[in-house]
Each structure stands twice: as structure tokens, then as C-alpha cells.
Length: 56
Image (cartoon, rainbow, N blue to C red; front, side, top):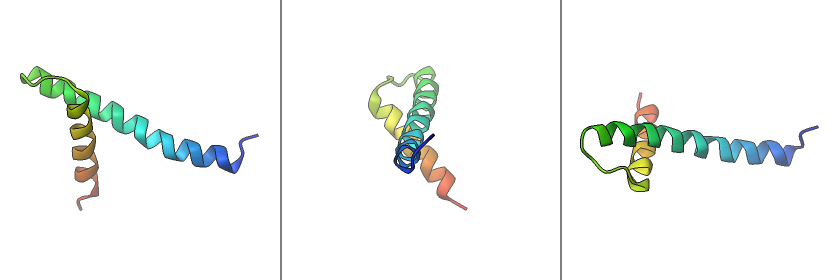
């Protein structure tokens, strides 16, 4: 059975993984436009996705 601590851990880790995947997809798009794919671009893509999602 899954404990409360496991659920908290899953709830904390899943958004990070999803954000990294979104950032990776964003960095691939930027790379196709000539930018270099780096972890910084992945983080930037993740932050952009969060910013867009938070806007009404």
C-alpha cells in the first residue's frame, strides 16, 4: 500500500520530471531554430511553460 509519505514524494517529483520534459521539448524547438540545447534552455522552457500556465 502507498503511504502518505510516498504520495508526498510523488507529488513533489512528478512536476519536476514533467517540467524537465517540457523544457527538453522547448529546447529541441529552440535548437531547431539555431539555439544550443543546454540544461539552461531546458530550465528556461520549463519556466516559460509555468508562466504561460499561470496567466489567465
